[in-house]
Image 1 (cartoon, rainbow, N blue to C red):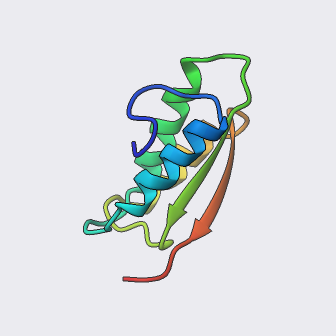
Image 2 (cartoon, rainbow, N blue to C red; image 1 turned 90 degrees about the vertical axis):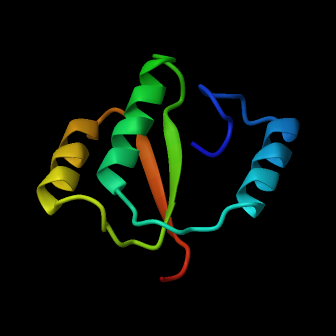
Length: 92
């Protein structure tokens, strides 16, 4: 988890600025496990039931660290729990 470092936070000006700073420090160096990421997002949203459950997945689009069936299973488990927008960030 990049920001906040624990739990969830309100998307106010201070938190947005801190998130932008955290993103600026990121250097990708390992394979992506999108299914694991989705399950982690679902676990975070479960901490605040009834809230707006929306996340943004920043990825190169390559699911490299898990099997296809693991990603398919994670997607199926997350359907209806939250909204996820995915954004491509180049290639490796």
